[in-house]
Image (tube, rainbow, N blue to C red; front, side, top):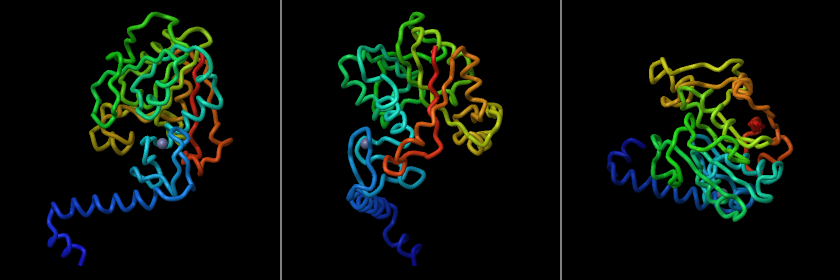
Length: 251
Ligand SMILES: [Zn+2]
């Protein structure tokens, strides 16, 4: 019956039908206040699905990991207090839009742009690789670099570069796709595209981080604090991953 219906309405009709379904779902999920996006303040009955249920904010398009980093910066760090010089690699639009509003933050964004797509929505101030940062030593109070190093062949060089441009006592938030049940990182760059996708989650990824992620960051010079701040939060309400850590890397 379903395939018969598909044949009757054709590809254009199916596209329209999917749009109507998405719109109806957004309307239903948009009602209620069971979940709240801490970044934009919107409330819903649930977040939109994004490869999994209850993940994407309807309004600012934040995912679980963005909401956790924002809550950490807002509540556990001094990020939004006082004058700061901040460098943000591969800036996520939802975080960019809120940080940019703070006049006391001198906010610089950077990206290599090889992975830029319109949907990201932020044109970086500087086009550069994290492995070759065009700033002097000891320049920034805070560096943010999330979900970048699984794409970078020489991740240690990038980590050392972030350490170099941080001021003494400055910190970097360096989140990665860490598999907490994997003792050791698996390098995938020499595997087939299918194997990379299976092990690392995406064919562009050159590795899947395991529990030695902390040690890799430390080997670049950082004192690494693995914050389990999520355990202090109402993770269901804010739509967070209950086992996601925040990697705070101090110089
Ligand atoms: Zn939002």
